[in-house]
Amino acid sequence: MQKVKLPLKVDPVRAAQKQLDYDGIIKAELLTRLAESTQSVKSDANVTLSFDFDRRHLAVMHGSADVEVTLTCQRCQEEFNHTSSVEFCYSPLLKTDEDDEFPEAYEPAAVDENGEINLVEIIEDELILELPQIAMHDDADCNVSSSDKVFGKLPIADERPNPFAVLKQSK
Image (cartoon, rainbow, N blue to C red; front, top):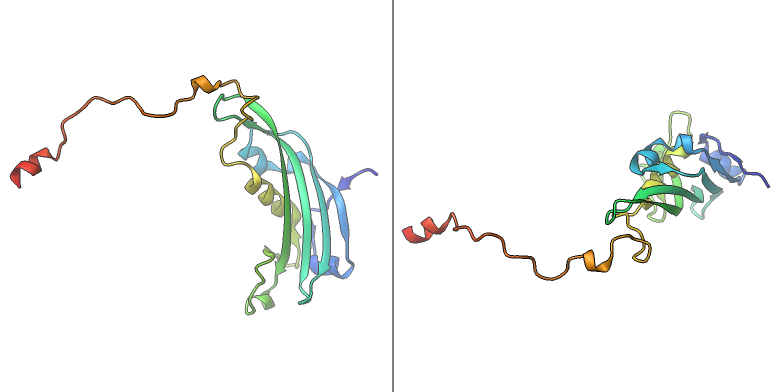
């Protein structure tokens, strides 16, 4: 089955009423903020979405996404490919929900004036949050050997006189 492009925006309440399921892609060109956070985006994002209502009759969007990006290793400064996979669960934050307590199980999704959520922004946010804080190869793949890594005591720097020693004498 061929994957199709996902819609940019969707009305989550209508989609939940119809119990829609999406299995598609988001083109790499649309993931501009992800491209700024990495060296490059190597593939289109594969996304699956499922809309439904929960027990409290809140519209809920469950989904998962994965994309392959290029990162720079912080040890050897060489580029490597990394697959970022994420699962998420959102519920639209409607004006009537602001008074009630929002369930902790769901992330709130902001709706626009038409009651739609921007799928590209939400999925791109999740993929950015899934990126490693410090990008590194596996130890076996990295060009920096273990002998080049420094552990233990640091060499003692030049001993300079303490600038507060004068205050000690005045005491």
